[in-house]
Length: 415
Image (tube, rainbow, N blue to C red; front, side, top):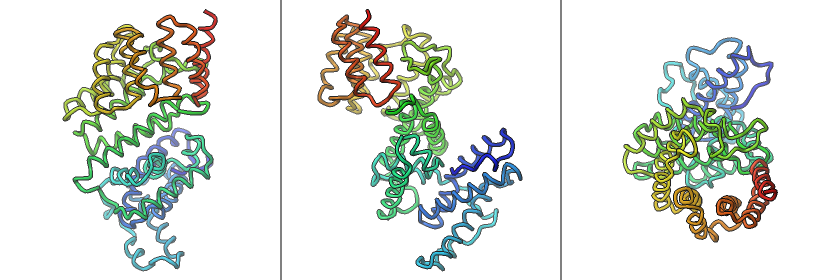
């Protein structure tokens, strides 16, 4: 959502409520405009203009009785103006299609899920799908997305523009995919939201440990999907996973902003309300059809969050779940976590043996070095642990992670 200057707003208390409402309504209005016009770029520009107008007028004049209708009418007028000024377009057909609606004609349907399916279409790369989803559905500005991913705004604008062009060239109609395509397409949507959340919770590069605007947006969007698909086990599982992980955020850093690993976190700081919600969702997810990867990850997260202390964690059950998850996904990062769980249950030697399976698949990845260093330290091999902590620190692009790894190496060197 495009932001207005501070002078455009009323009281400070009005600002967050208006922002939240506009962010919620933005994808709904964009979906309606897409359904009526068929073009993403023009529809999005018109909706952004409507959002800016609302951000300027609503705090002072009050939120209209039907805010979605207000935005839709404003966007329709703006799009009609754009079309009238563009002599090269098929003027009459589109203007007729975009004739202004009365509030009674505003569609009741919410096209947010349809819009997500389009933004996460398989013709797009993951990076493009993430950017387009945050822009079109999440309502973030191009500048906000660029800032979150530490790239120039012009670079992000090009990425989003190319994504829109690929959607247009592909001829994808605006609508839900065919029945036989929906499972795979839903999988793409969930994967993109999962990536957005992870980037917000464990930022891969730069000075910030996390970016709450990304993880928060991912949670908001998966909640929207869950409202539409409440009986889908993978949707419920992903929502549970995000909530249970987010619940631990307050304890992830100390008073100086430094990284605090899970085993050392003050669990009194964890958000118990989120944990209660997340555990209930995780339990429900496991009853909704065959267990998929998000359901299993949610079950693992629930076991961590329910443990009163690190020592009381049910590591044997976590180990069993990671073994199932590894067979299901073949993901090397799952194997990395499996090695940690195995070390907790059977000792560091077993964990190190499992890591050998990753030497080719994760060659040069800082997390492989970091886990190996941790297990070598447990085994008492100080010199080898020190070397791997330093290698991990060199390889990570995250400054908070680098500082933590260098601190571990320094402490080990002094021991």
